[in-house]
Length: 452
Image 1: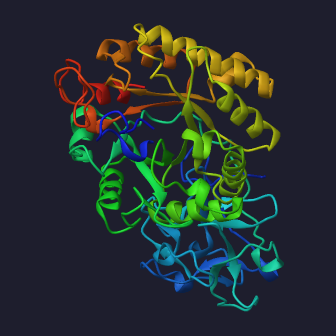
Image 2 (image 1 turned 90 degrees about the horizontal axis):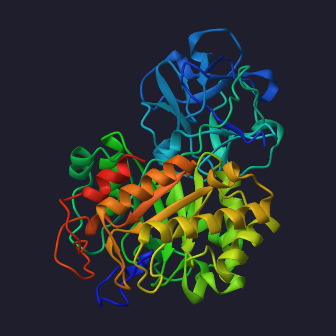
């Protein structure tokens, strides 16, 4: 998304029962036994609430060690702790244990129509297979065999949570004097960021910006800090430039596996696929590879929302965008949100009206492809703008961004972002990687976005 070409620095890699997730919210929680192989119950060994206690099969006995609370946040809880995949390791045979609830992907379980319970792309599995008392539970490749099928407490499948995502401006740790995410949160009230960008580090191997490790570096440290402060993150793949995964992963399965590595590493609430340029957007072989890969991603992570982000003309998506929308319908890809980037129109003056016109064009394209009503189309739409000066000299002021936000809220759009927090600082005119080029105070655009 928004990139450096015109600046020499600019923005790099710019940019079932899907038995929905299980939760602990009082309004929708279900409490009771989980039964499985041999009619045995999922049990906390020795009713021990300590972190790391093995989850096992055991004869059903009605004790608190077998009373599980499920609901829409994906957790499965007993004895005040969460069912957890040890060390968030997705390898076959990783033990399933009790652990403090921490909001990571290792504790997000989804129930499927085939009776399986899935986390990190694998299935809850009775080792062996054996139904003997004390049989440890683990994760394993999904086969929906008898030792991988589970019956949850009655009422464990509430309606899916609302589709609206919090306003989440892009934050890029690779350049532009990135600010402290938690300082911005405390100054603006923003609760989410779109972390950019995941690229190829060679072949079908994901890395931040193509060169920073998924774990252990500044990106993961920032994500951990955001979550610790009560926030969430979206993770963006691709962008305008850089070595992207779409052309490098040879099959949809390989692409999905690369995405899964990222999901397993950082536990995002949303994965955003910024599909741009001739290598992904205009290359229909790669477009289809990504779309088919997203089907696999959603199947394995039904609780993680999928957004696709792409450029637009003044009147809505142009040829490549229309093709992406229609092909997502033809392939039955479960995309939660179609986000357009309404800027770089060639120096258009009225950025509010241009954004509304482009968004209405997106709405019409979605209605045509899916047969949706206006309201249904708006509910699958997002806007990702550029704060201040764009590559082509268009200016979106804080006042205009407020107008755009209020229009998006009034129509029921479900995603709202801009490029970027790094640029959300004042400076004189012109495109810059550390400021907006328009009069403002620090973090004004983020503050407006937080009100979405």
